Length: 637
Image 1 (cartoon, helix red, strand yellow):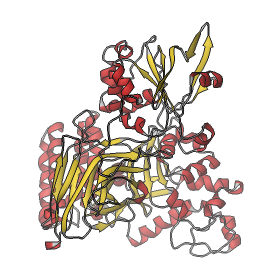
Image 2 (cartoon, helix red, strand yellow):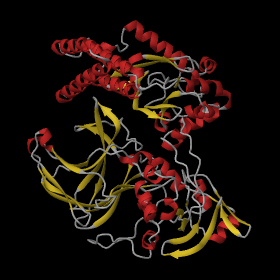
Image 3 (cartoon, one colour):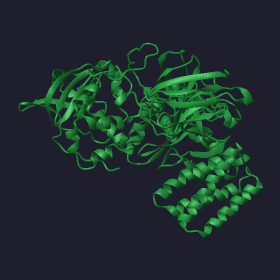
Image 4 (spheres, one colour):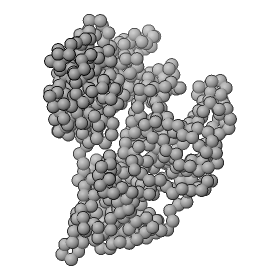
């Protein structure tokens, strides 16, 4: 994307709210300056009405439940119907069309609902799959009959499932949300009715909306609120549109108080032609959020306080300088032309220049920090001196264990690894999780193995329908991190469940041997045994013939991997290479012992028939065959 340039001398509105956190408290909080609270669906007819919604009943599984969805003129979604338990049924679901949301800065989902006293579930689809199909993640909430209530469902309470099958090892990735829904499946045969005013998210230390009386729909902002004041002023139409496009309008409705620099319509009009339109495009949302959040301070700061401090922290992270220079007050290079305009929920100051932050470079380090689930891995990387490599210029692929994976190690393991005397072993263990270059899931599966930076061998396979590396399940694959790729793994590679070390002073708690004495374990440095262990595992698999081959790979996973690899090739102009990937997949499927002879024969003929076509036609011919095969596999499962 082309980064838009901006002109100077543009009038800007500075809006101020107070904060529920003191500056010292906020500094200690996790990601204190992150935006908190996004809109998922508002159900209004305006710019923020959200996605379209459809009903899915248990008829798809033979049941007789019936549900319907209506959205009123008042902006309320009503999900109602009758739940039936006949024919093994018992659910009704209202779900959105496909969406693309990153909720990684938030802690959970927040809804304003009026229910019937029954339990419902919020449902998300993320990037996790099972048998080639999306895994559904559900979090339960209870309703009060006939009463409007705010309900919070933390992301940590969402549980994975697929067609009624529990998948406890699957974890919701809030950074990739592809669909949202509400389902009733409480095993009670009776009519149901749920009204939903909005679906949003909430974050750390975020306040609540004001309490409302039962049965009372929330009222719109009054004329004294900051947003209403800005809109009524008439100069900030473009600003409001920018906040809406960035998904930040609801952020200002929380009790948390803020300080925001916001351009007037005249300010936006002075930008280079096409800049505003470009920034408002969905694909440029991240850049728009960065620009707007550079004008926002998380706390109430009057002009006198800003001058006294000299600098003002921003949500975006880059501080602003506030000074008195040559008879005027400056905010960076902007001149303050008005100050301390009071509103019910804040104060307004006006400056004359848009303040643009330098674009932040996306790296493995920043991506892992933003995820919030790799604290132990990051701490270990820092101790090992590897943090700089995670934000360097060389592309790397990291098979990243979560905090949960490290916590599953024997007591004392992590503490032992972080000791100064074990630094060499720690480096070797961590580098056994890293491969040079960007390696996609498809690349890894096609190659079957790769050498890590420690020199140990990583082996990739499909085991029980799951993508694994050295036996560790890859829960989430292919997270783009700028200078590399992250694959989230379920366990620390090199620590097998059956290989506990009985030595109490080992530090790592496990080694690559079935048994060991304390002295020999210390000498061999259990924390560093990942390399030796990988070698042993590889040898064992070679001897027994248990290593997964292409013939043994789950067909759906193989197709997904091929498409994941082929699409970027096609889009980058490497059409012939894309066609080769698809052809190789079809040939592999035609040799798969998991498919019946007739299907294998058909796939082989398709692979042969496509060879006579030009590269572009060949790619599309093979892709269509893979898509049809995927549909066939889904129908069979």
